[in-house]
Amino acid sequence: MNALIPLPVIVPLLGAALCVIVAPWRWAQRIISLSALISNVVVAIILFVRVDDDGMRVTQGGGWAVPLGITLAVDRLSAVMLVVSSLMLLPVLVYAIGQKAEESRFAAFNPVYLVLAAGVSASFITGDLFNLFVAFEMMLVASYVLLTLGGRPGQVRAGMSYVVISLVASTFFVTALALIYAATGTVNMAQLSERMPELPLGVSTGFSLLLILVFGIKAGLFPLFFWLPDSYPTAPGAITAVFAGLLTKVGVYAIIRTQTLMFPPDARQGTFLLVLAGLTMVVGVLGALAQDDLRRMLSFHIVSHIGYMIFGLALFTLAGVAGAVFYVVHHIVVKTGLFLVAGLIERRAGSDRLSRVGGLVRSAPLIAVLFAIPALAIAGIPPFSGFVGKFALVTAGVESEDWWIVGVSLAVSLLTVYVMVRIWSNVFWGEPEDPAVAAFIESDQSRVPRLMTGAATAVVILIVGLMVFAGPLYNYAERTAADLLAPQQYIDTVLGGDGT
Image 1 (cartoon, rainbow, N blue to C red):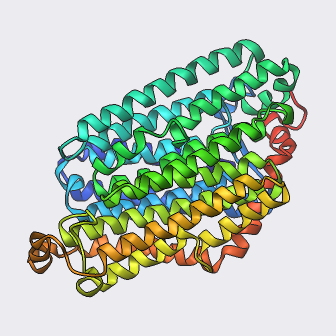
Image 2 (image 1 turned 120 degrees about the vertical axis):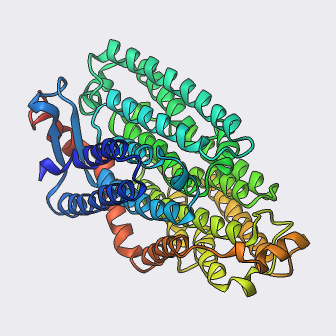
């Protein structure tokens, strides 16, 4: 079983190499890419089931013991993140193939996309900070290429903003690695969990804040989110979907992992994270209210809902962390679905500006249904998964008596409902205000390829699945939270049970 652990990284990288070799034959690239991602889904599901039943799995690269070997570890948090990321990467690639845009025109698309998939998987299974840095750099290189494909106006400028801020985060990360290694003699997270309490409180607190800064940039936390709304809307539609669903959640995952595993309770930044969470929620939803462009509006909503995830973590209680884990899974699926449907709207109407589009509920009723389901879920309308996640977080906040953040989360949730209603009323009701949009909708150019619709439908079906299986998923999130808040099993398994 341990031999399966590195496969979510190795298989996409091998697939990327093969895609380079067969670059002249696009059909071959597609077969290789789809096969690699399907295998990742299968492996992730097997690991998910076995880890939940039998406990976490660990393998050491080359058989070298900690800290010389590369530690790859899959616990409940890693397993669920592998499953949900693999399930999103596959339909997004199908969507890109159906779009017949960047994927068809650029031979580099498929290999770079597989490198991105490998980087995402590596981030979730690595057991040391240095290889987490390597995984981040894999994602950075791949995401910059994908962001700038297509030659849209402003793409290179937006991509450069993303790269510059990511390089700043990488510089801070390398600095943090050097300082942590100098202070503790290791970058293995299981060993750090034992050695951090031995450091002076001020030193461990400083390391905690430095890592929050690094991963907060990746996650889009306030005030480090400014790159996100500028970068995502200019990217190709399929790429925006996978970025919106996955990349910021890798940063959230890293914050959850490091804060719960590496730092003792007195060095955790609960109050600081709670303030950041509240500000992130408010600024994100206010930014969405001010937009007229659909994809830019949804990009600001990413920022807003990152705040909910950090809100749950910052409580450092079983209910709070369970709510955060549940909300991360929910948001990855729902936000990916929203951006895929936004691409369908743009393809059908020739525009995604709210002030120009209208009447799609009559001309494209299927797209209207596909939008309504994730919109209701992200707004937190019962019985969708967004309601379960927000109810869990609010309940955790009430139990901790953090009344102000509960009030902020409820107010932001109401504003989210307003934003979704505004999108619906502008895009699907009424008539197009721009005659050119009305003419485009009636033309043959507005036909949406079946692969695009099918991929978006598959993700929406998964959103419905989250609603149906919200109870079992939340129970899994509670077991995950219990593991995170009592990480001794993780430490013993990685270090061989004797702490050596």
